[in-house]
Image 1 (spheres, one colour):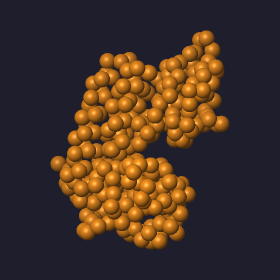
Image 2 (cartoon, helix red, strand yellow; image 1 turned 45 degrees about the horizontal axis):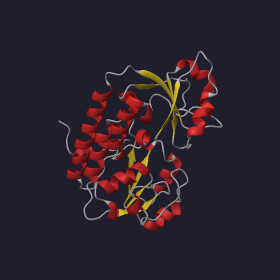
Image 3 (cartoon, rainbow, N blue to C red; image 1 turned 135 degrees about the horizontal axis):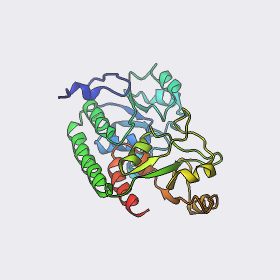
Length: 271
């Protein structure tokens, strides 16, 4: 059985102590800012990025420290945080390393698939003494995940191309959190080759190798007119379905993933 102490080991193997008293948390990961609020830690969050939108009414009161990539180190320093929450994919390693000079506890996260949310809930719950709240989220997530699997398991698996940007067109690699989440409900991200996790692609050349193109709402905000744009690239012999997809429901790990699994199960059945 996994020990309670193991729940406090982050994505790079660093072990964190249980907080005594109140923490001062700066979070550089939008979806985890939402998770921290859902764990009941809102009054301990002293800084967040400009992309940390949720929960809308509460997060407005938290000072902004820049973006996920260009966060202002001096602003963070002035907030005197005890803890900094970061993510391998979202935050530049060099800037995080610089922050370690004045933040004693840097919690590194890196969920690679939907089931990694369980460990994420327990990691933050164990560090910040919110074990009960974390277990409630675990129960809700496991229920939503199980229901999504059951709702989609009768559907034939499809090869998909998940598109995140245009000019240039960009997609995701199959080992990303997004791709693994899609795979759970039967949508397999096509392999485009190369080592990049978010590679550039020639969109038209891939139309014959996929069953469906999914145009994401972020970081590029694809709209219905883009569906028509992609459909215009197709030949009579290669006409995959083209759908818009809410990126917050596919790429936001944390508590948003509970709604995300329900959303994807519904979309998979009707897209």
